[in-house]
Image 1: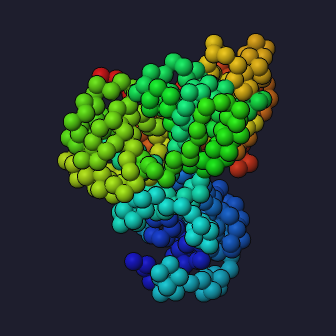
Image 2: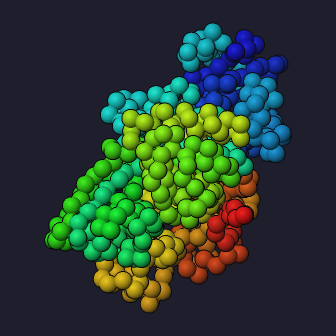
Image 3: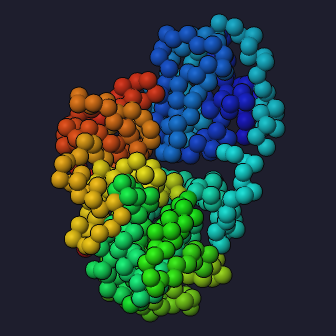
Length: 124
Length: 371
């Protein structure tokens, strides 16, 4: 259920790192809790974010939820597909439904995040 | 969600069915209710295109009976209940002396001197207290909170009547909109009302709580071939908003009058005095300073309850807002200064610090085609 190629946060985000860049999304558990996603407000590319800081919002039909950045750095990209198909966050949260990418300023932060096993235990 | 408070929440007779369906349960108006089963979008679309089944047993029933029951209802509600024939229902309001609204309600005339008020779940105790206090000197009228005697199922959607008709010999198509009939549905003694809160055709069925599970299962089995699904409060909210229907406590409350809420049509202007009549008449004569209007976002963003609205002529507030599954637009209701209330007026909404463009549009957003 939860891929082991990435790390997770208590706020139900995941981050998968390649090189110095981390790609961020929300977990299967989070998309289920949210329900039908209808709007994603991504962070502006170029903005600096600190670990744990609000980096955007996801709106489902019934509510607004904040997205926290799992790591510090500079926003390098936002998923361009979500503007027209926000429901991708529901259908493929760990893949095509990713939210944004961050150029990591402190890559060691990643080691402090939850492993797939730890996260699976958290949402059990 | 506050898990620790769920122990005190009331449960409808269908609670076990909701859990068995895998519904997400949430606290609502003091009740533990299903917010969604398969997903709000899917449930919403089922009601617009096929049929949906709702558990609305949390709604309250207050009955007034006696020679002076009508006089009491006339005094404490906004609409003119003297126009009701036996077997007919109307939407009405429960006004304060200032003409603002404690709640909205349906008034059913069950028999000559016997009426039933259907009130919102979170307001049952408040409404009952207010009604009994106001009717204290109303003469021959007994007032009973009979909420626990009824379960209430709503079957709504273009195929709703067809599904319900398979379970009863009562001719449902012969019941006019906002009328009701007594009979058996699935062998269960029922009161069948041609009403709803979705903008679709359908019925609401009042039954004894002990029979609720049986009828719930029967309706789902009977309607399986047309694609009926259980529908939670999430889609109930998006459906009613698309249909331009106001929600008590959210779109209007004790700070807003029936006129400001766009509910002048449930005020019986020609009936004798009622609570709040004078201030309402004054407001009607002098004109409104603000009004509840329907709007559509014209730039990306979704307005939510409580967001600030900014018009050229002043500020207002959003009372309901969502992205609607059927029309696929961000829509809502907002109180705006009267100068900004005509359809086509552009204004802005503060969406968490970002100003997003919106436009006043005619209400309702969605109107079904009547056959």
